[in-house]
Length: 82
Image 1 (cartoon, rainbow, N blue to C red):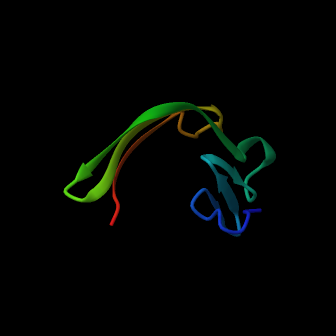
Image 2: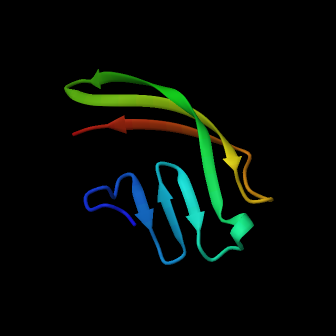
Image 3: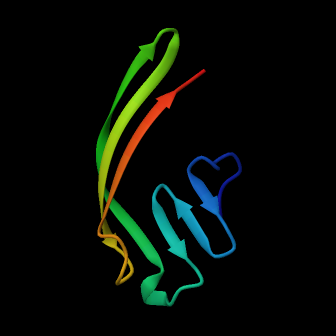
């Protein structure tokens, strides 16, 4: 269950929970429910004019995953704050 105010890090639907990248799919067989990523990345913060911005790159290996699940997860993010 997601704590109030943590919607940014935790998303729950009728069939799954996702928390900091750890995903649990309740409607799957027990051995096929969990994605558990292990890894990390780097982030660079800078300004575009007067707006704070950030760029990050992350790579994770799903150490627990369904048989046909993705082995790696690559994340690329660009943020511009108002």
